[in-house]
Length: 183
Image 1 (cartoon, helix red, strand yellow):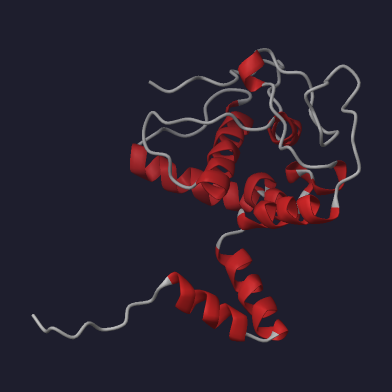
Image 2 (tube, one colour):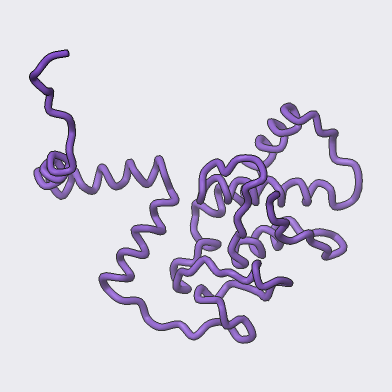
């Protein structure tokens, strides 16, 4: 082993690199980061709100825990969560949410892939098609926002997003399973 050490990247060299970038380079890097990890958009929005202040929002009538204005009441306290954004930045209204979680083409590919991996059968009864789209949309949302959680690890999806998915792919009887905690 050599006694000379090679200079490894350190926090100060990262800071130096970022400090030397032009505004245009910062914008290009930010665009690339958001394309690779769209969930970072919420971090950017939160930082913007903290720096510039967000107008106070009193919540939705009958849904006091909601800040985005698009949530509906949920059957359990655990499911009564909001995306935490102001009405102008609600997660369920973002273009990425629509593309990843409501676009039937993406969800159809996901379903076909999952059917091949898990050897699930084809759609059989009334409402099964929408149910499979809903479950695919929930999985897309979780992966988009949290990455791969692993088997048995689950997180609650904000009410505004759950209801956007349910509105797009409704159950014919109006019966929904709701959040099931992991093992």
